[in-house]
Image (cartoon, rainbow, N blue to C red; front, top):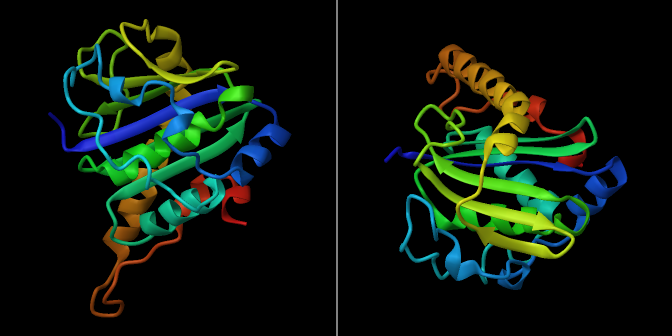
Length: 210
């Protein structure tokens, strides 16, 4: 199993809906109908979904939670956060080193908040290099379906269309990773004891950082 974990989605929505989503609070566990079935039918089938859902992102709007992630990406925290609104769709690609419920659960809840206006699938998987898996790969960890009827985890889903729709944001992720890598190479710890770069902010919709 890889030590890098990703959550990604491409959910159709207009600009106004995107702004409303950013202003919405990160919901509680009730936003997902069947949290206990998070891993059912996928690589981690049988694994418990965790107990921290009630605290994940609590008290924050989606915008605030994402902005905190972006700030972490600007330092030594091993994360990368890509959030864009392009081609009438919310496009998200979130990368973390190591599996942490405190990163994954609020990401899934935040995307569940988009359910009423943005039908689609949210994918969760592990891959060291951060790339998408083949749609038929055995390594997918969870799939969250969102839509007018709410959000729920699903099993045995054909992911061909979902993966194809994420190819563009995957390219953006690799461009962001390259920029951060370049900044790390240029960093002189003798001059700046703590690594900081503004590069991750270049790959996030400006509305997230308002």
